[in-house]
Length: 216
Image (cartoon, rainbow, N blue to C red; front, side, top):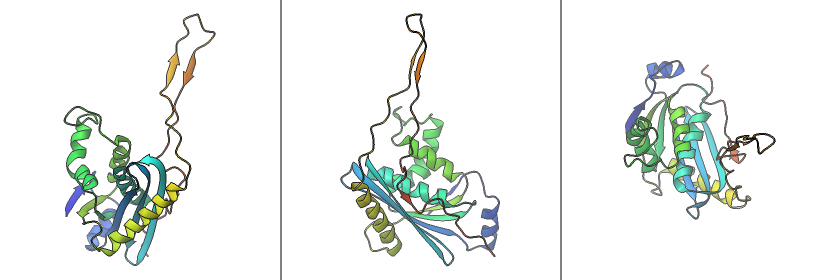
């Protein structure tokens, strides 16, 4: 178990930590077949006697690592208040990235130690933003080893990947912005700006829930 503190503890997070034993438990997994190819992600969230299951599909082509990241992102973004979280993942890529690599990447301007652009930087930035709201304990569990909640998350991710395989392929990325300056040869300047697209698109199920429930 490793604890990630980002931005301190405040608000509701401090309240539940004061109680001592109240955490949101999250189990995440990603799937991609083939890899790269269409993919899916899944998450199980538990708070007291309340549970939520989330899953999503990405027609891709995407990768298993991107789906593992997306599972953690979607689960944390679903929490509408700062929370104390125990997050269980079978992805050493996600866990090591958060605990070891992410601070260095940010300090290097999102470059690796070899001065190369960080892979999946768009999702790492999004995960980094989600981390700032919560205090998180990161746990690694061995995948496909009979852990019931990890198996649930895996089934959700596989469901998403199967749904993704039935979707039309994602359109190719838009061209980079092009600006043509008016040098007198053209009647006006032409500017094309690429839109921003989220990798989960419209194919996410169960996201955006008011969770955990309010304490009575």
